[in-house]
Amino acid sequence: MKPAPFKYYAPTTVPEVLSILKEHGYDAKVLAGGQSLVPMMNFRLVQPAVLVDINNIPDLSYIQNYEKGIRLGAMVRHSQAEHDSQIKERVPLLHETMPQIATTQIRNRGTIGGSLAHADPSAELVAVTTALKARFKIQNLEAERWVPASEFFVGLLMTTLEPEELLIEIEIPGLPSRSGWSLKEVARRPHDFALMGVAAVLTLDKKDRCQSARLVYLSAGDGPLVAEEAAALLQDQEISEDLINAAAEKAATEEIDPGSDIHATADFRRHLANVLTRRALAEAYQRAKGGK
Amino acid sequence: MENTFAISVTVNGTPYQRSVDPRTLLSDFLRYDLGLTGTHVGCEHGVCGACTVLLDGEPVRSCLLFAPQVDGHEILTVEGLGTLDDLHPLQEAFRETHALQCGFCTPGILTTLLPYLEENPNPTEEEIREAISGNLCRCTGYQHIIDAVKLAAENMNP
Image 1 (cartoon, helix red, strand yellow):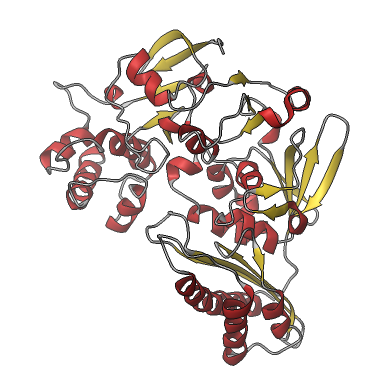
Image 2 (spheres, rainbow over the protein chains, first blue to last red):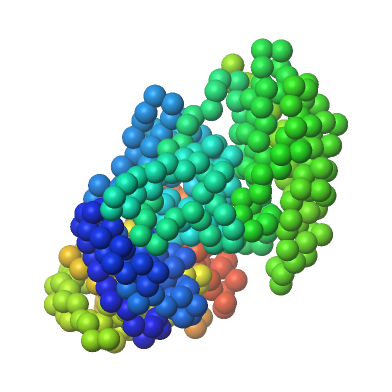
């Protein structure tokens, strides 16, 4: 037995989950896909007294269109999102992100909601939902609330989720016309945790100037790191190679806050951020120009 | 904390009923409770791929599932592929091309490839490398595994 003992619940409805969470508070952990939680339990880094398995709740695996974009139930698995034609059409950045997340075996189990609630700063979905200004529906037994991605992630593996709350839905608006997007990352091995990555979203006005830009980094701090000053450099400007280089330089040297570890030094991560930002912005710009 | 959970699961076509401690990993359940030791346990945190089995036809890490989670589901392990006298064409191709040395990673690679080749009958070398990127092999350098997959694809879809 690798994990420490726990009491196992397998509820089949959301209200059941919420009442178990209310009863057990901080002693309980929600088991979604388990692709991050179970490794931590196997190492006994996490030892919940109560495990609430939400894999038997069929109502949390939907993918729906709404007028502005896509709504995903929290238990949509990565492989389900990866092959969904509505996501491909309406939120292409998310579609392109999916195959870059972990391996096939992990994507067959891992869930969108689980990855977001885990809030690993090296997770692609954490950066991408922040870049796309997604918002999250959260419930407890008494009420529901909506939290924008920009306020949901509050620190290393930390979110605004309270122990008695459950993440229910992820709402991702589509991008305006004349928008381009890109996700670029570097990992030592394909599908391993990225040493550095950036999600770029760019929208052009009628004169081909930058109407809005967003750069969000993964593995660059304690949470998704939004480079606001670099984006401000682009604002209302005509996009050029020099401007892209200046924005990349600003983000990489002044805004991100990567750490050093066995995999890469902070300096190397800053170097990667600079190069990846240039590539991501160039691709996003091309796509924005192409998509009238 | 005494708490057991009764599960019914079909493994390689055979139904089993067992009572388990919920913290039993599926990999350990297969090996210890059912005696199916073909599923190998490597890293036990979802990196190496040695413990890959098919859950309702999809490759998953059996070290990252608890046994109660497969209640009512179907599992296929490497024992469900072929027998010594009647190897699956994929196994035959691995033997033919010397695609294993110690063999520790092989069950996980076979179970990963089984549904993959059904969906992708003629993969390119690059696609094969992508398909097995979730499985570590420390002996072969992968080249002979690639050869085996190409051969298996030919033999399975003549």
